[in-house]
Image 1 (cartoon, rainbow, N blue to C red):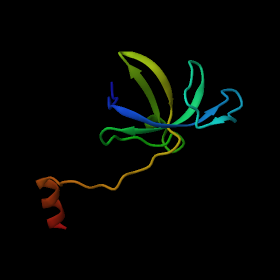
Image 2: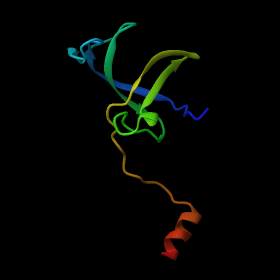
Image 3: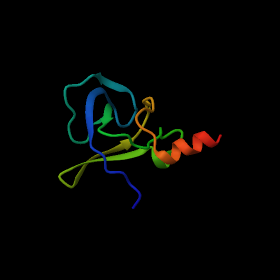
Image 4: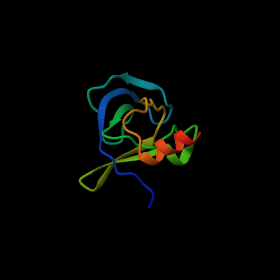
Length: 99
């Protein structure tokens, strides 16, 4: 199975939305109950490969699991990309020198 298992934090609950109409019910709710739909901001603990569902559907789905049970499923609306930093491998450095 080609899935990534990466720990994420729920940074904030942005809006609670109606499941049928898609209209906003409440802005920045304190909690959501079972069966509710909402838009949340999630921050992964390490870099991961995802894309907005509208751009590329196979990379735009996710599932939230807790204690081996699925507690939420959804689609990615927006991705905020971080600047690529860090170290480069020796192979990458050699490839850059050849150009």
